[in-house]
Length: 301
Image 1 (cartoon, helix red, strand yellow):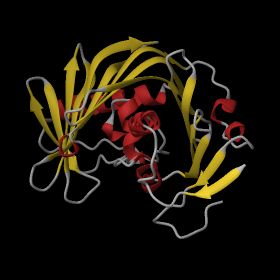
Image 2 (cartoon, rainbow, N blue to C red; image 1 turned 45 degrees about the horizontal axis):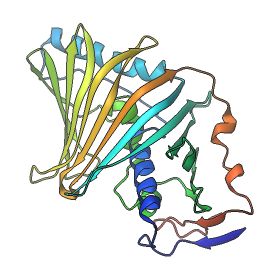
Image 3 (spheres, rainbow, N blue to C red; image 1 turned 180 degrees about the vertical axis):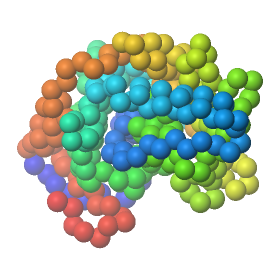
Image 4 (cartoon, helix red, strand yellow; image 1 turned 135 degrees about the vertical axis):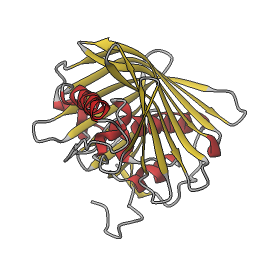
């Protein structure tokens, strides 16, 4: 078993390897791994008492969709990545998500080849993150953090965005204390400060048949330039829970767009914890690269 430390994020890789890593990286960005501690829904001063009560009810509905989803298994999913003027690349992937009784959340993503053979696997298990590229017999291992994900994938990933995107609910990170809510043709436009002090976020909640649907989530900088836009569409009911089947992420400054199309998903099915076990990939056949967090000087375990 070879063990190395990753010295640079620009390490040369094959085109297929890079595509697998980016595809899995964007899915990690879109999917789920943050332990949530609060979800308060304050009334907004911009609304009448009636609209404020309606908005609070819709926010609670969004939260309940998350609370009612203990596991999620996506067996048919396409990821299409467009960078600049280059031809769009498309991969097929599978995903497993599970929330444990102690609140911990687990995630596994597999990138598939032309014959449904597994090419890449990403696993996030509590504070550990693993990326295995099977054809290259290479594994990247480190502590789960924003900087580690950026170092592996070379794109701006925030763990706190992940859970919000899979459930089409940007409020799952608990940032609900500084909301400005404006009614618009039966819908609600929500504004709040971004995670970066210089950013703002605008979130559109569409209400259809008395069911709320987050349709757009835009992050802008201090110059009102769009840093990122997420669009959620093709909402369908799965086991009584309404959720989007298409998610599109645009990052205009990077000239990058990612479209995720889900055609088969199952909620609250049995998923064994072994799906999220890192050990099967840490064997003598794999070259293991331990990745240190640049924000932490500790030697990786």
